[in-house]
Structures are given as structure tokens and as C-alpha cells.
Image 1 (cartoon, one colour):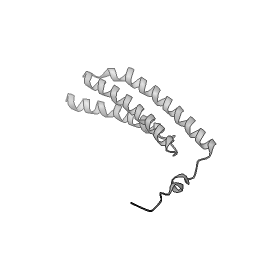
Image 2 (cartoon, helix red, strand yellow):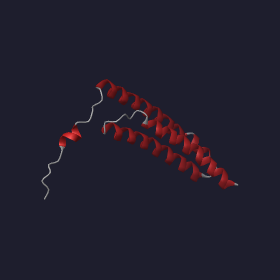
Image 3 (cartoon, rainbow, N blue to C red):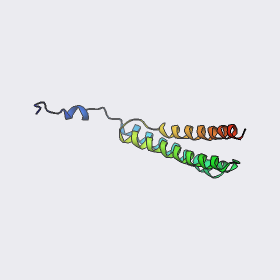
Image 4 (cartoon, rainbow, N blue to C red):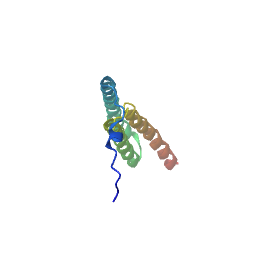
Length: 112
């Protein structure tokens, strides 16, 4: 048995962010996430159907939806942890467009 007492003060002594900064962080992240949602819906409904092989269209739709959910989930996770999180939905948007360009590249290589 240990006689050392746990130090609960060290965990709670972390510096807090100012409330206006937290509010701006959340508002900016929500706006970026909504823009990402619009991009995701556009990619999933319009652009993914132009592939000759339907598997690549389905893969593009799945990757677009997962990218948006991943960016939004990262925002929620980092906001709950008390860190700046406004740029996390941007990661999902960048991943969405990276997958959208990667899937046609793979489709063009398979078609040859």
C-alpha cells in the first residue's frame, strides 16, 4: 500500500482559456464544419456519380462522409479537452478533397 496521496490540485491547476476566446473558437469551428457539410453533400451527391466503375463512386461517397465526421469529431474531442479546436474541421475538408482526388487517380490507373 502506498502512503503517497494523489495530487488532485495539479490536474485542476491548468490555465483556463478566456470565455470570449472559447466562444469564438466554437463559432468558427461550427461555421467551418457547416461549410464542410455542404462540400460533403456536394461530393456525395453530384461528383461521385461520374465514375465509370460504380465501386469508385461508392468509395468516394463513403470517404467524403467519413472525412466530415472525422473532422467534426476531432473538433468536439479537442474542445472538450479545453484546447483550441477551430481548425480541426479544416482537417476533414482537406482529407475530403484529398480522397476525392486520390480515388480518380486510382480509378485511372485501374482502367489502364
